[in-house]
Each structure stands twice: as C-alpha cells, then as structure tokens.
Length: 234
Image (cartoon, rainbow, N blue to C red):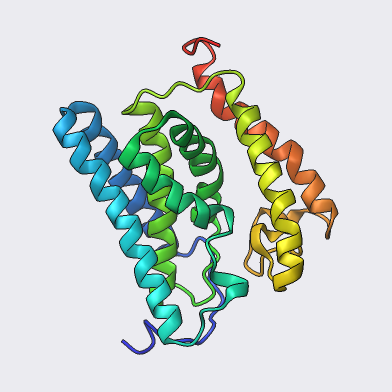
C-alpha cells in the first residue's frame, strides 16, 4: 500500500499490458455510459451527468490530497492551468449545466486533447501507483464527456466552432506564457516539452514544437468537425 501511494518516481511503460487493459476498460465504460444516456430518459441522463462530474471532482480531490500529504504539491506543477486540468473543471461545469459553449469545448478539447493523455499519460510513478489510475480515469472521463456532448446532448459542431476553440486555446497560451516565467512553471508545456513520452517527442525543441503544434491542432479540430459537416447549420 505504501508503494501505491509512495513518492518514488518510476518510468511508465507505455502500452504495457496494464496500460492497454486500462484503456480497454475506459473504452468499455464509455460505451456503456453513452448507450445508457442515449437510451435513457432525462432523469437517467441527469443522474449520469451528475455521476461523471462527481467522479471527476472526487479524482481531483484525491490527487491533490495525496500530493499535499506526500509533500509533492507545488504551485509550479499543481495549479489547474494545464489544458487537461482546466478542462476537468470545465467538464464538470458543462455536464451539470449543458451550456453550449461548454459543450463545444468539452468536445474539441476533451476528445482532441484528453485522449492524448490517455494514450501517453504523464504518470511519473508507473503502473503500480495511484497516480497512474487517477490520470487515466480523470482523462478518460473527459474524453467520454466530450463524446457525450455530441451523442447524448446533440451538440452539433458548426463550421466556425473549430476556429473558436483554436482561437481560445491560443489566447490562453499567450496569457499563460508570462505567468510561467513568473512562477518558474511549465503549464501548457510552453517552456519545455513534458518529461513523459508524448507526441512532442517527434517535434524539434522549443520554440519550434509550439509553432508546429498549430497546424496539428487545426487538422485535429477540423477532423473532429468533419462527421458533422452536413448536420449543423452554420
């Protein structure tokens, strides 16, 4: 048990059997939740939305409690300023309010962004640690919630929506960069690549990987809009 909540840093073995099984479990849970939401009445959907939001808050609380009790919590790493951390709070808000702007961001940032963290989780403590499962579960719910927005809540991305999401992401990055310099942090990975394996490993060093991510994000957001190009009035 001490190892499960320990502080020793252990490299994560990407796509190990445990990682693959965890992704499979998340996929199965997602399919069940989406199907239950699509087939259920409004009361069932409300309960499922509340449960997903509550699960995210519980996972966030457990993570911050563990890091604080282990002496690992720092301003430089644990403010909710990374895209996925900010999206966790926004996803709770979107699930519980169903506001259109929140559903939009849940879809583009949840499906387009959080899924990267499921495939290449930034888990510095390995597959035998609580942090790995918290990271996988919290990001997995964000992906499920993004799919929920377009399948259960009937949000249909318009042609302008990918560009709105992209513009907001760029504004956020511009605002966050000076804060990173003040705090000595690396939120949104604007100062350096993440320490864990990620898609950024295939990109050149700073600042080029930031510039090259722009066309990648454009392509990803446009691809997410593609299934709905004939169904949303612009």
